Amino acid sequence: MSEAQNLQEQIQQQATQSTQDFYGQSIGSLKSHAQNYRQQLEQYSQQLPEGDAQAQVQEMIDSYTELENSIDQAAQDQGIEDAVNEAAQQTQEQMQQFAQETAQQGQEAAGQATDQAQQAAGQATDQAGQVAGQAQEAAGQAAGQAQEAAGGAAQQGQQATGQAAQQGQEAAGQQHQGGGQQAEQQGEQQQEPNATNAAAQKAQQMGVDLSQVEGSGAGGRITVRDVTSAANQG
Image (cartoon, rainbow, N blue to C red; front, side, top):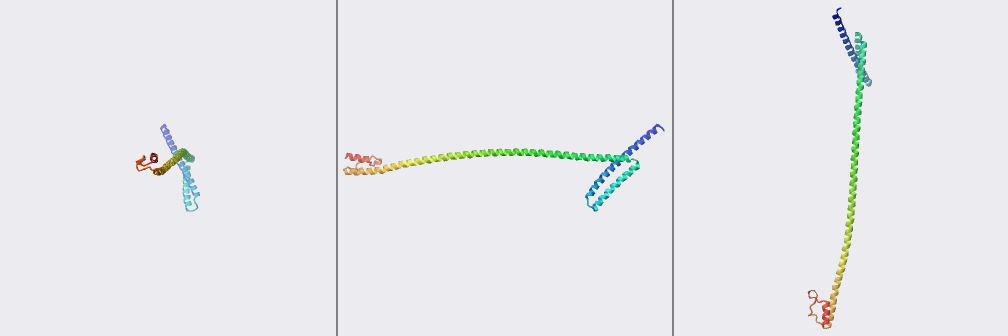
């Protein structure tokens, strides 16, 4: 056998082996997926009540079972049972790992969302506390200002009341004093005509003529002084 023939045979063997490997991996992966789908359908079937729906699902399960049996038979015919079972096992492990990673990523995402929600809640609580503190401080300032204003108004009211009372007392005193002066003046005015009349009568008794006498009072009015002077002259 020539060297070219040997090389050609080696290439054919490698190609055949590669084809068998690919075939074994492909149907092994197919077998693993068929097993996974069958198991899921079996779980669904257990949740269904007995009846037409459960019978229909059981037919689907049986079809996957037949597919698995066909794959096993093809692997046996090709003499690659071990390769098919190994490929099916690897595929199963890959699917489990993918499911675990997906679940872990979901948990991490949920944890991050929870942390963000807690941080947002904490910030909202802090802001609410600050707003409440500012509101209390503003209320305290407003109350203090109101108390100061009330105190100032009360003090001004007391001062105004005191001033009014003092002014009332002063006005009453002035009115009392004015009344006394007016009464005194009225008394003097009342006494003066009486004294003038008495002096005039006395002058007439003494024969003094008052018709020529011009008074020294306002408007030439004859006063007590005028009558007394006239009587003395007479």
